[in-house]
Image (cartoon, rainbow, N blue to C red):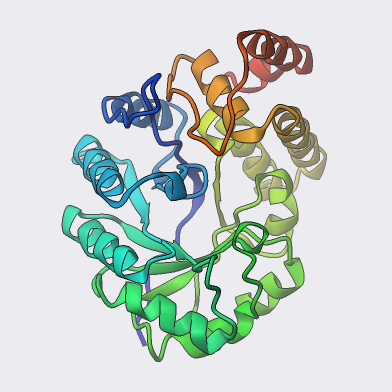
Length: 305
């Protein structure tokens, strides 16, 4: 049975950079990568939910992956490429391309229009993708709140490696802490990077060692302190940092999370442009209001290195 190195620490779920007209802005990747490195992020997860993957066409997704691998080549920053799609043929093509350009791993969420109705169906979908990149670790991306696919992840892990030799684990963006614990004990030493920023501490308490999230793009210092405090047994500090995360997420979500998150990054000098429809963007007045709220919270002090 194959075994893969597990992820550790924070993995930033990167935004896809767009120009003002919402066209792809590949020149924006370099500044994102530099910002991640400055904030001690060693892995970027690109083209996922935060990366608005379902609002990108296949050629744009190839270009995005290629640019990220070009920019990070020779640096400590590594790249995981999300390749999932409602069209499995497209997903397989993206997986093959990600392997070709040197991705650390690939990940794919479940088809969400015509949905797999059983664990066996889901395994077949994932196998169709992973076999196109057999040398690259594969993570199923479980995010039922967006896909509407809510199947047993312990059963998935117990059965899937027979058909998916490259299966490394699950990118876990799922509120089900019970199933998360069960998955930790499925034979196979699977990796389960946590995907819910606003309650990372709960996951650490039951064994998580890595996390993939969008707020790590602009608030990584909060979570570095949280993880360090937890490791040192300082739960009071860890809880304080986690509550800061909750306040941040609540504030951004009140404006429409995607547009507000991109606006926040721009405040930090990393302009990733607007969100594409159907996500929405903030008006100029809303951006001013958001900045005032972030200042009131103490956000810009929280993220000092």
